[in-house]
Image (cartoon, rainbow, N blue to C red; front, top):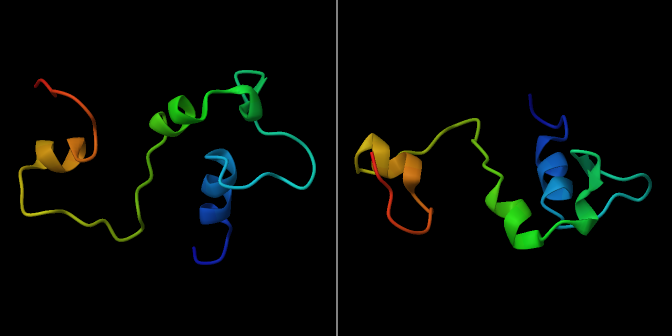
Length: 71
């Protein structure tokens, strides 16, 4: 649904900006206290219109991950 705030929610969760009031908690911990690199590495986002590259399904799924990926 367009305009319902999905992108805003992701931006807040990944700490691109902060809420004007309240806190966002993950396992009872404020995300402000979590390591930013770790927090962002735990997130994934799927567009409403998915884009696949001309590579295998596994390579598409693992695209952007660091290190060796085993089957």
